[in-house]
Image (tube, rainbow, N blue to C red; front, side, top):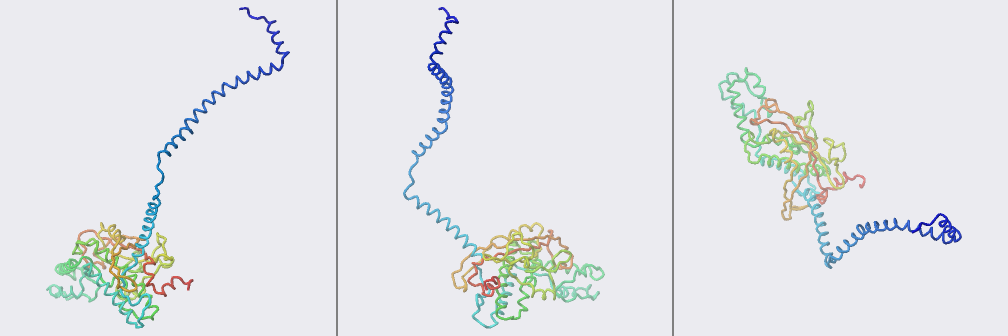
Length: 434
């Protein structure tokens, strides 16, 4: 085959030159061929992506929809049951919160408004309060240190005592520690006698506790009728205070269950329960004694915590009395075994049972409710000098003993006792409305 020469090629190009329209068409056709190849490649790739993504997912969803059954006609009834269950659960929580504050009263003649105009109903309330405290003390099989008269009689029967001719001062607060510090005043026989008497008292009960160390007992012994309005308020706040004291005593009872001697009990002594802080000595609260105690008992009264002015300590809970709850602060000091500190705190804050027969009268069927209203705001643990003045005639056993000082808050649900809350109390809590 003979390759065309240069002249032949020029002749052909001259033909194209003479037919320009044919040349334009030829160029367009060549450009189209060049663009068609990558377009086909891109189209194939895009189809693959769409098939792997959208089409396959769509087919999967379609298959799932085809496999699903339609919603049953009665399905709304099941949903209604579920919603009803949630509503009942919320109502149950509300009722349980209300039941925590529905407690038995010391007197059903005063709240919300006394029908009797006689001042004797307030005197009767005080008697019921003191009798209730005595029953709580008896419930925990409480004992006390021996009186000086008991020790004096025992010492007078010994020859060594008659030879020294010394007598102990007659007072409830024991001074035997002063005798022990001087061997010239007391012989070994005398100290042995005192020790045996003290140990015998410790074995006669499960915890040391005395009514004079419980707030309110001396208050109602010395109570003078101040007028109806104030008397109703006094009874109201001390009713709340009694419930708080009851929980403290119940805590001791639970802790010492199974023990019949102070020497083996986890809780050794109830030092103090109060609604105000006692005098501080070197940063330590000490229970007052004697005449000073009787004077302070008139000041030591429970009351609602409405602001930081009424707190015993700054509350970590940041809770104050409001339209839903009432808050009271209280202080309790106990002597416990060193290993019983945390168990006592846990038991104090645990749920407790109480009985309820209705408001404003106790004529309904007896119901058993639970309450759990205590939170510890501040705690302090101090070592105990068992030979010191406060502990000289007490015996606590061989285990290490510490003083546990707690400041707590107590929460009352207002709806629980709104039916019996006196109007004077409501006015004090809501002065703007009045």
